[in-house]
Image 1 (cartoon, one colour):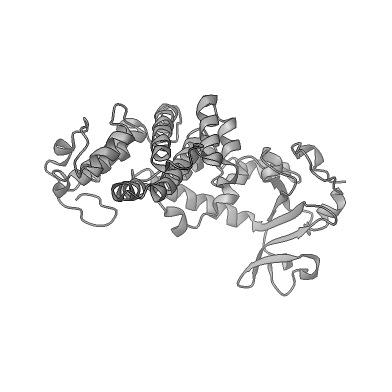
Image 2: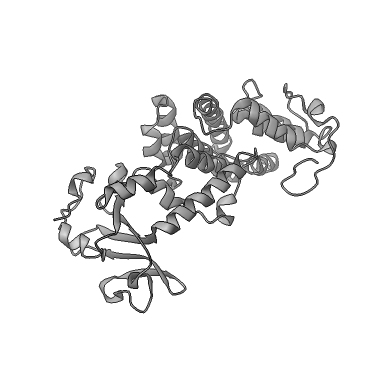
Length: 366
C-alpha cells in the first residue's frame, strides 16, 4: 500500500488519520507523479493543517474537466474555466483537510521557464517588485517543489526537481517582499502629522515585510507570512533578533499609551534586520551582490533627481539592503520630518552625471 505517514512531521495535538481515507480523495492513476508537501512536511503545521498533495499527470485527462471530475466526493473544488485545478475536503471527525492540486508535467516545466524569465527580470531592478502578479508563475507550487516528497515515480520527479533552483526562487521572493521606500515614506508622513498610531501600523508592516525578506536571504522559498516566526527560528540568525521580532510583532512594546516609542522600536529592529540582510545576501549565490545592486540603483537615476532631498532620502533607504554605514531609519525619519535630506555617503550627484531622463518604463535611464 502507498504510505506517506513517515513523511509527516510530528505536530502536537494532531488527530490520527486513516491513510487510505486520505489517498481515496486524490484520484491517482498509475503513471502519475504524486508528491506530498505543505506545512505538515516542512514542520510548520498545526492540528488544522491540510495534507497538501500535488498530482503531476503525464497529460490532461478526465480529472481535469468540470463535467467529469468526481465532484460529489469533495466539499470544494477549484476551476479555471473548464479546467479543474484543485480539490479540497476534510477527514471525518478531524481538523485535518486533504488538498490536492492537479498539474501536468508540461505545465510545471512551462512554469519553471516562466520563473527563469521572472528571475532574470528581478535581477535588473533594485526596487521592490510586484512582478509575480503579471507572470505565469504559481509561486506556491514552485516553493513546494523545493522540498516536496515524491510518493510515486520518484525517478521522474527527480528529473523535474533538478530543474528547480531554490536560490533563484528565494531571490524573486525576496525582491517582492523586502520593505519598500513608499511604505517608509507613508510612515514618515503619518509621523509628521503626529498620527503615531497610524505610523505604528505602517512600521509593523514595514517590519514584517523586511523580516520576510530576511528569511528569503537564508533560503526560505515560502512567501506565506502565516508562519514567519517559525521560518525565522529555523534561519541562522541571532536568537535575540528573532525573539525580539516575535515579541514585538505579537504583543507590541507593552506601552499601549506610547505609539511613538513603539514606532522607533520597530525602526531600530528593522535596521538590525537590514544588517543581517547585508551579511546574508553576500553568501547567497543567486542574489545580486553589493556592487551589482549599487549599479542597479545608479542606472535608475534621473538627472532631475540629483538635487532633490526626497530622492536622496529614497536612495538612502533603498541602498541599505546592500550598503553599510548609512544613517539609521530614526535619522532618516528625523530628516524627512524636517523636510531635509539625511547626510549619507552615497555619491548621488556623481551617479547622475551625464544621464538623461528615463526613456521607457521602470525609471531606467536612457
